[in-house]
Image (tube, rainbow, N blue to C red; front, side, top):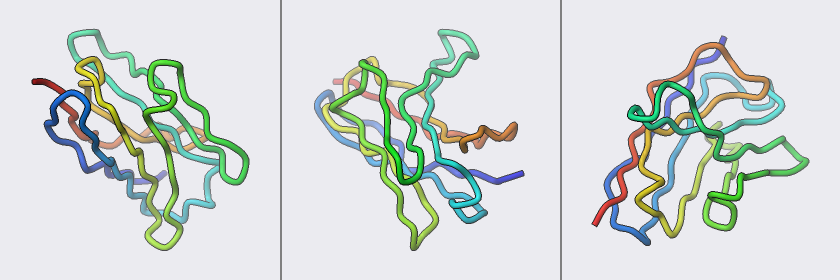
Length: 116
């Protein structure tokens, strides 16, 4: 079991940037990596994958965010970040992180709203 806390969300205009943070209460090396997901309540309960990082191997992203979103790891603070640039209205969602392999316990998420 791991406790994950997401933060850093907010409201930005299209083209803006945000950096989301995911804090874990266990050493990140306990896991194989970390993934980021997002959920739009009006589109149901399914979470959309927006990227993941396998420690020491690679990071991968879907076409919808590739080139705009970047995952990084801070070993000193036991955090994983999601840098989001050139944000679009369709990026508006509740963002979550989860370990790889995934934990059954999701955090509360952090809201990102992109509008003009």
